Length: 191
Image (cartoon, rainbow, N blue to C red):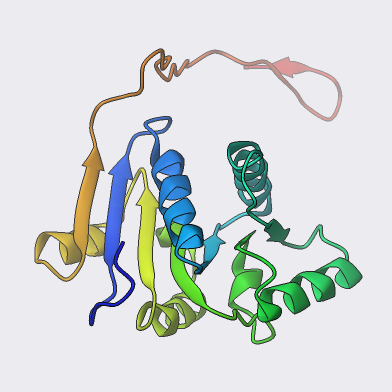
């Protein structure tokens, strides 16, 4: 990434589950942090934000990168400290849910916004994302982009990259359709 250009990056990265989208995002985040920029990693769910937080902690454990997470499970006093550290530039990567889009979240020098599964955010959140997109590089990750997002990439409004080759030793996703027995209120089993 080049931080001194006139137009910020807006790239959609598509790939199947387990193909390495998060790894690409981690490398982009590392490049941004190396260039003294902060990174926001926006996730649609609390569980996903915690998964990404653990992944990033593990991935950057040997580097001086400060990472935090904000979501509904983080205590209010801890969130206040995270927001303070973020504003002062003591935090490099902030991972979180739509909480990242709140008015009290202020970055000292945001350089990269990573959005996981952008199609799962509502209209109000997408408007706030649009405001951020004007001044920072954006990397959107999706296994299933919505047609409008895909169309924007195909007509050139957004750049598109596709991960088509799975990583070595990736196990295929297996889906099973099985019969399940259910119990009604009286304990009778039905299919």
